[in-house]
Image (tube, rainbow, N blue to C red; front, side):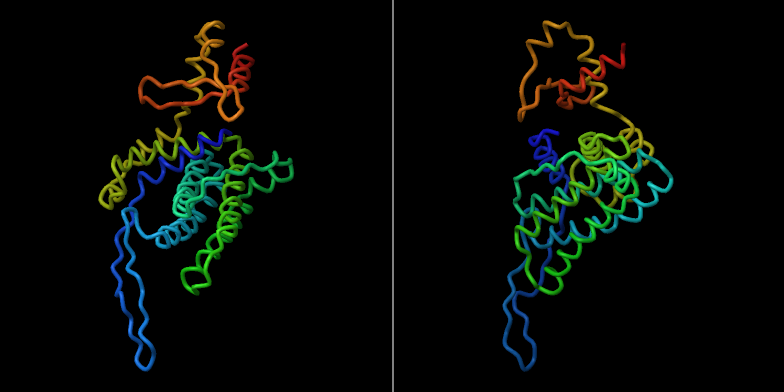
Amino acid sequence: MIAQDILDYIDAAVRTEKVPYFEVPADIHVPGQVMITRPRMHGVIGDTRVRILHSGLGMMTEIAELQEALEKRDWVNVGEEVGDVLWYWAVAMHACKFDRMQFRALPTSYMLAEARTGRPLIAAICAWGDLVRKDAIHSKGMKPEDALAALFDVFDEACTLCEAVNISPMLVMRRNIAKLRVRFPDKYDGVRFDQRDLESERAVLERDPVQEALRILLEFSEETLAQTKMSKDGVLCWTVTLPDTNEVVYVAESDLILARTRKG
């Protein structure tokens, strides 16, 4: 997985975000007590704490749908729900101004078996939600290192779950953005949400842009491949722009070698 791809996903995800303005009294007077001054919540994309609260609540709302998809073994829907979790994760990462990406060691077979149940990801979501609750409701504050650790766990477990059910985490992220483009061409819209076209969204979720890019690369000559190969974050890869959508896809050399082997 290429770190820049993940940062690009965060940027793409927050372009679809729309947090309403919250107008609260600037001054709160409690009889018999001192006057409390509270800053107004505002901002172009919403107040930071509102966005973090949105992230925590949003992830929690995905748990039941994720469990249902896992029980039905509907892997396309599992990818969709993990993508929704990662969208809320991206909002939190952007709101906290985190731009450092961490990567875990490759998961063991035991970790993959456990991840397939969804429990580790759900536990990570709940841990993030609890951190958000303590900050929002009990005003205990949130240390940046605690927030980053909790968000890393969410990302880590989401990727492990994807790998456990043989879905590429980057494909899940790309499909999530593609689905949102179908649903909300600009930003979140309540009317569009109520009238969303589930069949069109499902068709988008079943697309595999990496496979489309691989089919294009397999038509290239060895000379062309050698001339266009590049290194991105230490990974040898090619950049392919899909003709129908103008979507830019990075294909690792290892993926191309595997595709050639399968083609025979």
